[in-house]
Length: 570
Ligand SMILES: Nc1ncnc2c1ncn2[C@@H]1O[C@H](COP(=O)(O)OP(=O)(O)OP(=O)(O)O)[C@@H](O)[C@H]1O
Image (cartoon, rainbow, N blue to C red; front, top):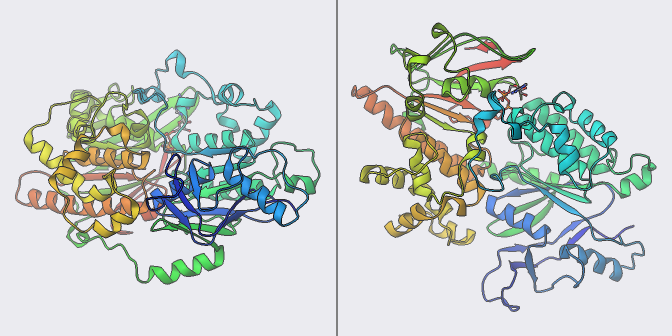
């Protein structure tokens, strides 16, 4: 038997580093019944629950906080691991792990490291010299220690990304990028790998494949460090995987997971998987998020108005590879479309033509692409920016963080669909504040999770809203930046709203509130349309999760692509 990898005693409180030895504030987190991550044997951990709590628990595992009342033994970093050694000593375990474990943390919702604007349109063609680095080069040159070519080949085969190795990084679709980042995390072969929301943005098949592959890595059946070791030592050296999953996590709980650490109201409780699943079932009977304006929405009205978008027989190829193959699609005002298809099938490319991000958008024959009832080539790109609201992982990655834009200004850039500062009119400022208002308890940087519950029903004061409005966009954590960029997409009530994986990086609770807001928006837009002051909004949603489409199942329309072809339209 070996000492546990991480062993946090029951009733431990977590405090910021540098806080008073005898705490004067309530803990950031409290462990109700302790957390033990054994270093060998059958064990898989998933962290679920409140977004902020999950992030704190991850940071705790990375030893970014102070523990009280019983701190781990002083010594090597990461400290949470020292408890394992202590426990080994008191329990007479003779075979403790000698060296501190290397821990790697893979998060997918991080903005670019420099905060600079990156021109995401480069991925659709005109590659700059610096954008030409391939995935293979990235694996060889950016990881430390550098993996062997054999290890790269093995992981590429397991994750089915061999065909992408020679593509430029910027050409990868968002699902392909995610697979590649999981591959990079595994190639670094740490003792413990923490993956945050690894399944968001993955299609159903990919989710299954990756969940099963993670299970094999976690059990030691796939060992990327030393493939020649015998079965016993492979199990001992297995890379421990810790998954942090959104909400209840029951949607994406892989089979190999045996334990769940659930964070609720600032408290961590560790449960066996079965017990946890049972409990969630019981609770779901009583805790439903019921959006209050749903019934007011008209989802499938066949409009007599002219189409917002008319795509007729469009094809796009990169060399021999056809990414879109004779695609036709007509979108009318008021229609709700769910654009479906597996990772890399061409969804984002199709949308980039409509959005004017793709270099071919402007040069397609006039009869193949019309937007707002005119051939695309007769519609100026700034008009598209202004009339199409758009949120996507690409916008999230590219949005400038170093310009000092405030949260309110960031949302306001949606009026023109630009990435630069614009002076807001008083009316626009009021509108932005009205969008921020339903989220004020989430965005208020001063509140703790426990105080949120207590006060979220009270009307926010003007000054809190002003404060949020004026706070630097880049000071918000990634999940809140995702929320602000969603508000940016809807702020101008555009004729066409494109939500491409817009909920990625957000907590379930936040997305549930976004859905309520959308319903309210659509009801108001429909009312205005009925009094003949405009058309209803057309909406396109890209999501691999049926649960995240913001209308009732079956009430919208579907366009499904497969390898660039339309295979289903209803
Ligand atoms: N410059 C390029 N050269 C070759 N292939 C490319 C290039 N740019 C994009 N591709 C490929 O085009 C395909 C379509 O990508 P796209 O981003 O449209 O997929 P998607 O359906 O949006 O996927 P996801 O669900 O992962 O977001 C991908 O397989 C991608 O690798």
